[in-house]
Length: 173
View 1: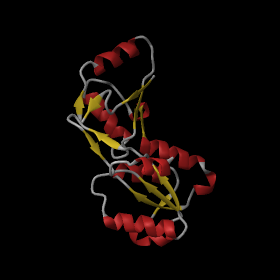
View 2 (view 1 turned 120 degrees about the horizontal axis):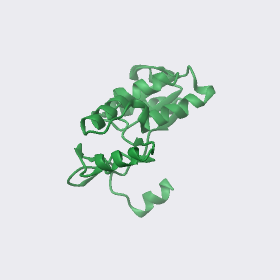
View 3 (view 1 turned 90 degrees about the horizontal axis):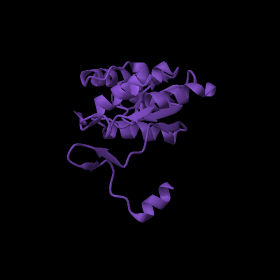
View 4 (view 1 turned 45 degrees about the vertical axis):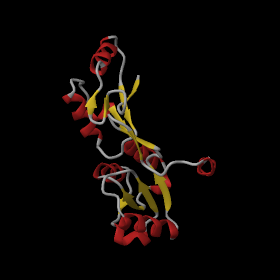
């Protein structure tokens, strides 16, 4: 069974009542549980440690993040192996993309990037935006770990981007 972490197991870093017990019951019945998250900021190991701290035994192999899913996809594209990649994202995203066989380059070498991989992270700034747009303008392919409209917290649904108008939703398809 695939179980989403955000909003099912925890919300805003706080455990959801009954989640650990429900997962324990599933496992007791012999159901394999895979944890899924569209959060590219933390590594699979970090998510597994968080789960264990909540009383839910887990290893990195039990967790699939949007960063690791993106890395798996890129690794499956034989023509991308060994290509120069500019990664805009967390340390975990950088590590996943490097493990996928791409060569990471720093933002000041953006013109040499053949691939740009972006994922939401704390600390995103204009230098990263400039590097990514430079790389894309010079021909790099763009890959993103997701396109979330909201970031769930315990108290609200914080918007990650400006409110969508009907026109912008049409443009996004």
